[in-house]
Image (cartoon, rainbow, N blue to C red; front, side, top):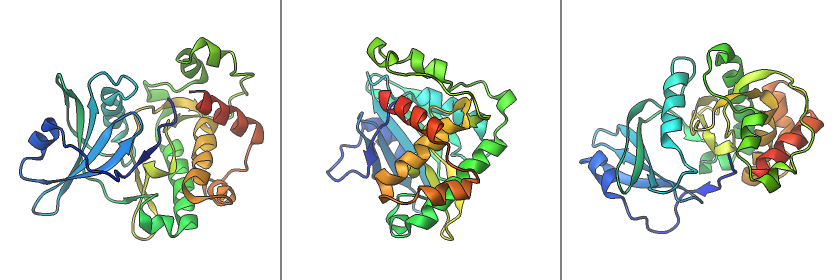
Length: 248
């Protein structure tokens, strides 16, 4: 899994025909674009009900919506994640339609203005995810071995010594700040973008979640994150898993 930068589109977005068909009479709003070209749209009904559709152009193998749909369906009985309504593909691209879920992204302007609240919610939400998802029943892996196997030979040679496992959990896989949702009181409500979810050492998530705080909020928020999660930073494991993330 590579680090995929994403943001609210700042320029006009052409709405794919499939998204228009899925929307029907709903209003269509582009809400997210990542650097690989994947788009997310909010579909808003006259009643105010919301759905979300992710769309990926054909020939973009780095973004696997089938993998995300499978993981969401598995995780849904255990933790708050978007409900899958439909998935499919045609010659133009693939799509994943989900029901709306309560909460705003931790990088919504409301929370960018209150970063410590957001950071603590991210830490608490990640701890809840790790404590709740059943490791023994999880059919997905995000292990070091699997991730290294997907690297180029040149990157593989730079991995270095792998730390011993601290605690196996079902990791989010892309635990960066935008993928935690918060309610208006500043409590985490759900997680999104689980296409890489799988069993791994919890530091695979902790290292990257804390890494992303600087990208989104600036310096100085890691202590609040680790305090909310309930663990002291492990510098060796943090360094290894950040390095592995960057190699990806």
